[in-house]
Amino acid sequence: MFTLNCKGKLLAIEKPVVMGILNITADSFYKGYLNDGTAAILQQAERMIGEGAAIIDIGGQSTRPGSVAVSAEEELERVVPVIELLSQQFPELVLSIDTYYSKVAVAAVTAGASIVNDISGGNLDAAMIPAVGKSAVPYICMHMKGIPATMQDSPQYEDVVQEVLEFFVNKTAECKAAGINDLILDPGFGFGKTTRHNFQLLKNLSAFQIFEKPLLAGLSRKGTIYRTLGITAGEALNGTTILNTLALQNGAAILRVHDVKEAVEAVKLMEEYKDV
Image 1 (cartoon, rainbow, N blue to C red):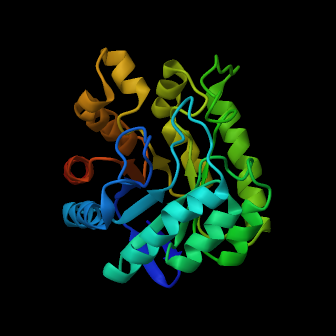
Image 2: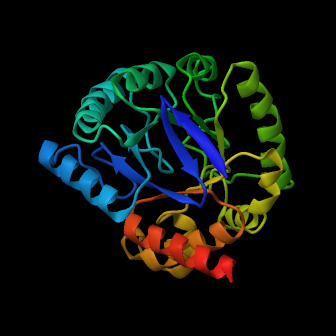
């Protein structure tokens, strides 16, 4: 069991929880709501809450392979109004901000977010980890090799599991020194990894339990699934559910997904299975 202090809201992870993805972008990996208006954003958030999401993760730029970075200022314009809106409409909801800019993270926390989700683990903005420490919110530290624009250009590892473990050894110490009390670790499926690397990390996910931190698995509709199956991202829900189930079996505490209902069902079935 893990307990996260989300600005006074205690999120108890007695069993795995689901994080729903809400992308405020026009070029998202899966689907964006930037041009759909306030009503569409509220409707999507309400649907995810009703389906059992414990957290909603709000992102203002696509970080899919090959994506081009947007500025912190543009990201702020996209996410802050949405965070303010959702925190007013759903005051008990735990909101996460998906950003690697410290400036955006601080503004988002001020606006109502209570978790910072950083795909770079502080490597793209040296001010990020100290800023999160001062904000006193949980931090999702993800491993990524390279940057989104080029990370899938032939990523190489001698041992991907060992390299990601070593990355987290260093990052857990850095985060502790910065005053971050609630740390979540994300091995970064699809971020500077080949399909084989992703399956190696998934198969060995339980190795990361050595840190005694919640583990986040973000496998939803990723290339590892649809390229392996020879389908599109839009057809990858069944494959996502299968890999989410394997992640749960191997120790994932948080599933970050586009499809909340199916992930919640996977959690429920796995809990019954483990309880036998």
